[in-house]
Length: 163
Image (cartoon, rainbow, N blue to C red; front, top):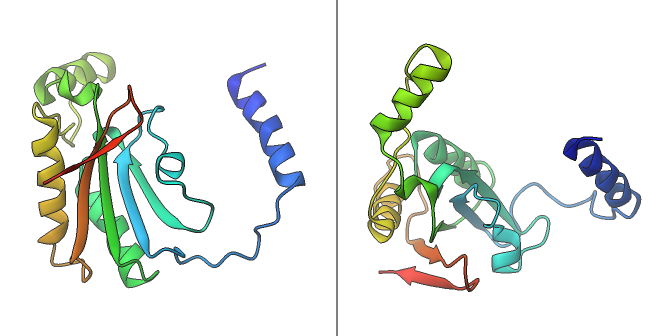
């Protein structure tokens, strides 16, 4: 049995008790969350969210990339979100990497360098500030008054706002 098979059994149990099929697509709390894909970072648990409450956008590092802006544009223009929360975290793997080293690793594994950048960073709080600023200054996002950034401490479970 694979981990996927185990997860599919979990889904069967979830579906048997599922009673939220009538939730609307727009986020009930009007919030979109951008966070790292790290398995220790679960925005719904960290923020006490339920299905239907918020859009959750996850990627490596919780970096605000072009694709994050694309997803936020859909969230705001088509689904009515008004606030954005950016969450990065302590002990993030992107702090220990460089774009060049990762590109070399990909070239060794795949025979070519990726046409995208890893967007590694050395200063976690500055990375959060950069992401918040990129959202606030995007011409594609109409709702930029409430954009806040946080560092999640994987050792304590606490969020600390980055000013």
